[in-house]
Length: 628
Image (cartoon, rainbow, N blue to C red):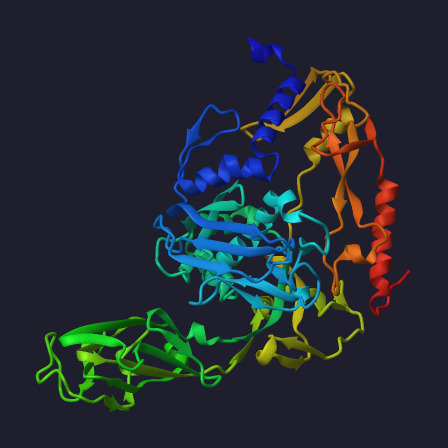
């Protein structure tokens, strides 16, 4: 009875309100759909009468990522701790501690300057690709986006005053790098707790241990998507039935867009991404740019005490991360007073002063009264493939002695640039039914509406990479954006039957509806009946809105300095528009002040002026030709 008493407008407004409460903003969508979908929770319908529990992930972690910040007196973030559960087993297995000053935060990285100032700044982007794990790599400032300043050069106590925003922006950049490196990872939920933000993560798409699975393989081979789609469609009975139906026999035009992009990647390896000392030992030295030496033992004279005969153990763990860039790995030298035995993963590879292979005491008198020294230059690379390996130095000492072992690695630190052309337009260019309509080459329009404009882009030289791996490439083009018009069908469309519509229009009046239909036996049946239009519902002239503003520090980052340093007033305002409630009140947010009360606002002239100003300012900064 209640539903019958409601008008159509009341039911529509109730349905719209229920839908808006479920998906009005990103937080609502995350809480009602994304988070329960990835974590195995229940998703309810819009009216709340039914629910179901989807299974979109194979593995999940209550806390996949945890980020903690500690501001410094200079206003910079002086300490940044990141803990990560890489395999989503519920425990952290990757910890990163950064103590360099973080002076600015960007959507995909950070800016590090001299503490409390904007001098000596470095632009750093988050990167989680490869075996090196999460790290910051140096980039140029234009490669970062959405940057703003947080240290004392832009204001005081900015981090603590905007802690939740700072954590979300930092976490968004880290999470974006992780999900870019492994597309299977999905972020289900984020929660801030003081100076800490935690992310709940889930593994979607595939249950395999490899990120390069069939569902995400199109990321590396995008041209394969069209071929796979064609093969699936050809073997699908429903698609073939539709393709052979009368509706599919007509001629239609379909617009298809594609791109041809030149991808240039430059690998810039660091020594620790090839081999690193994961534990044990007492030092790692770098005698040359391409060499690392790992030292273990106790080399100080008579630093070991033995009695009659005592065994001393020294262990060191080496992490072989990139065998392809490891040119050589060898045992340079070792010495001991009195006996020494050296093992790799439990297998004895060297000993002295004579053969000693067992786990017990040496085979001879423990006291040798001299230091045994050797430089065997044993090749360890065949013994140590990729992964963790334990180097074990066992020493037998009588009275007093010392021990030492040195392993040297020669590294390939060449940059190894690579280039490929990803052509997503090949199949369309070869299709007889497709015609090139529009083409844009490196932001120069060469074809418009199927006609060549006469403009030809000049060959460009672009720089790729940074530091020692910086290269310049001169190419005819780097990116082409194309649009094709393709004919579907045999070139003809059946003419629609408009006779019934013409009969209704010609013979109907404001109070009588005339109609003519074809009966089952093929004879036309003419009908006439009275009708009336439902009463029109009163519609408001507009949806009442109000305009508010809230103060905001101008902390954005420019090419040379924070924007506030170039302005007469370091503070500004953010403007907001709100839909007024049923009582005509403006639902202002925290810190906002009313600018224009509820009503039918028309700020279109102001918006046009702002957009035109930005357009003309951008035109003044580049050499272009524009028809006016």
